[in-house]
Amino acid sequence: MPTYYLACDLGADSGRVILGTLDEGKIAIEELHRFPNGAVKSSGALHWNFEGLLTELKNGLKKAAARQLPIASISTDSWGVDYVLYDQRGLVMSPVWCYRDARTASGVENTKEKVDWPTIYSETGIQFMALNTIYQIITEPPDRLAEAKQLLLIGDAFNYYCSGVARNEVSLASTTQLYNPQTRSWSQKLFSALGLQESLFAPLCDAGTVLGPMKKNLATEVGLPPIQVIATCSHDTGAAVAAVPAQGENWAYLSSGTWSLMGVEWPHPVITEQGRSLGFTNEIGYGNSVRLLKNIVGLWIVQECRRYWAKQGRKYEFEELARLSTGSPAFVSLINPDDPRFLSPDDMPRKIADFCTETGQPVPANHGAYMRCIHESLALFYRVTLRKMERLIGKKIERLHIVGGGSQDATLNQFAANAMKIPVLAGPTECAALGNILVQAIALGHLPSHAAARAVVRNSFALKTYTPESPAEWDAAAARFEKLLS
Image 1: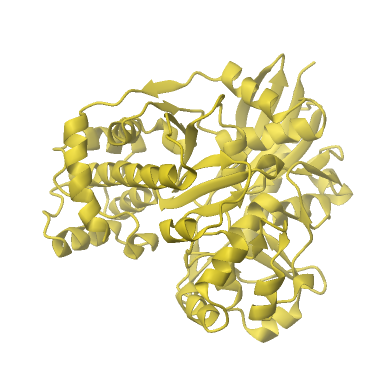
Image 2: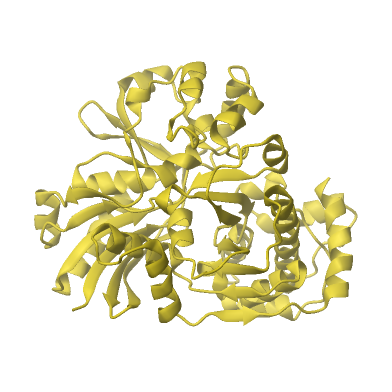
């Protein structure tokens, strides 16, 4: 008999409630409900419409209930670092901040006054990013923290909403830069240095923890029985990596979406001076494996250009932008995707133009040229990141698995293969939801192991392979690109 699961997959751009069906060694997914997401600007600050997202979750659950299937369980995965504070009554304390809010700059300065960067990295193994939870929480007014009873990260807040059980699952907790992957606990040293109370942070749990049945009042409202709520990999990248259809050794992954996250699955943290200087991060994956990776600003740059052009009256589908990119001249202008200016929203084409002007390059001549610039620059940054990662682990990577929404971008996938000079295997697209569902299946005993779950993905989805092309041209472009990184 088939088994059914629900995944709520929350991205910074959109959210989905997805039905997963596991049957005879294959998995199928169906999108039941999709809803937009995005930071809300109020009084110059960026935050999330958290209550609106919960309403959309309920709408998705009602659609699931209407199918009248024997659904076994549900879990939510989300982007990292952002959190929800609850007051003494258990109510959400507004606002729920967005990691792109400008307040994080002051958080970095305040943190530097209390604890030095080498100590932060040695405790957490997490690369410096101004948006990390550590720099957000330090900006909270003391009276707001004093009023707060509990902190949950976004995906775990959704699991709490469904189950009434408050836990911060380790894959998501590891993104905060407050979790110590060596002790597998919150960092006592950082909490002490920053004056944070550990009691504020909901207890940790491993990926695949069964939290319990759905709250009776919620189940009644949406029309579902009290299905099990499971903390799978609450971090969407952790969930996506859990579903990478890889086997054997010497492979890397790229979770491609708003962010591009490139890394390897490793048995232990790599917290060294070299790792710190190269900007690599040690996030936790399924089974307490380590996702040794680099966070790269990804298709966010494309999304923001598309948003800006839509406001100007020119609306594009992503496929059309990819075609425009392919049809534009190669290697005219390049940007450094890691430049801080590209992290923030609003008028992304102007930011690209400014970078090109400042570095003595032509400003892209049209929308296709902007897309070509972004695609080539991301692919070349992947190459730089791959070479650094190979130095860090002492191994040569032989193939790259690209998963997530960005795996549909054939132009970027081909450019990535060209730049890195290794085969790229693209797919599946909904890997975060797949990983979420497969970990549920393992937790409930419906699959025997993680290896069996990955075999299910390979049996269920056709992957597209991109073979490297034009090595000389890409080597020349890489030499030019690396000069932009200094």
